Image (cartoon, rainbow, N blue to C red):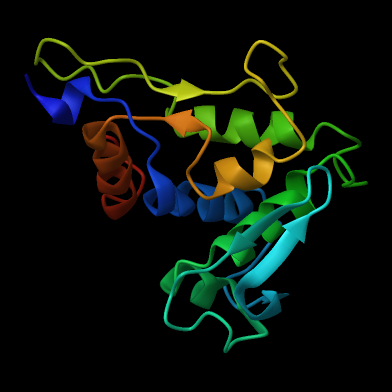
Length: 171
């Protein structure tokens, strides 16, 4: 059994690249923009979940750049940015933000298998915005931003990183 193609898991922090790239592609942020990461702890109001950064910098940084958020793998910074620009309270997207985020992820082909010629590749799973069957909730968007509430195989996330390293060309 090949776990790289057959085991679908929540990618966690490795998915933050897709979230940051979505923000950059949609021209919502620049790498040098600043965001308050609240010293690595925040609460998302709909379900009052607490999100905390686990990096050694947690509790030591109040505001930092988008670039630094990625460098230190800040859950709080990534989730706050995605919620700010794709959340339901975003006036720019007029309550279509989560749908736009999902569309951007699909534009990166993250909803498709790689097509590798190894038997047993499972399909990635990305929730559809506001879909009850997918158990969409008020905390889904910040969790997805940090690689939870979706599933991919290790090879699928690796293929995405490879495409980024290859100037956007999927091999």
